Length: 217
Image (cartoon, rainbow, N blue to C red):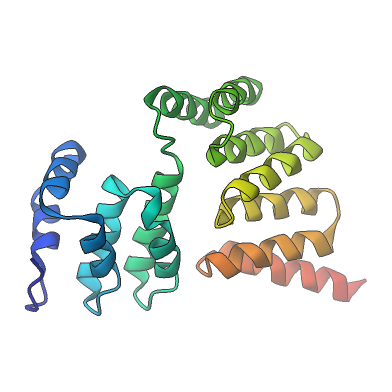
């Protein structure tokens, strides 16, 4: 379906149906396989790569995660952005609609600063789906906001054990170590996040600040 005229059929389909994710998801499933989209993700045509990344956000399964992680280092910034966005979306899909609804509810509680309630909701997610990494990652965020550092570290480590590509959990662990004054551990965690996702500018800047603090002592 890919045409070498600078504008792909995939990009046309997505542009025409933008704003209607349900319809777009249906059309993508009817016309493209995951292997097609992975191939397009690494196209030399930036427009096609971006479109494939966005498509994988909607219909990608865990099987495409390695390709998306690789795309975090793509030469095109738009493709890198869409690959990161797709990873977060796929990581938030457990395969169980009930669990996904609980996770979404917990995220809403976080946004509304109801941190203890968020912990309780994410705990239910974890109890229901103990191998779902995002439940631990989101609960770690809630624990961070409650300043329960040891619990936040524990959940970050569990998220990483279940999902070694989880740059968000590595970054979160770094944030906790900073609060604990464990600068070497913070830098190590931040560096792991950057190895996976070199687009985390704020994390790179945090490393520079921490190194400067060490030098000033």
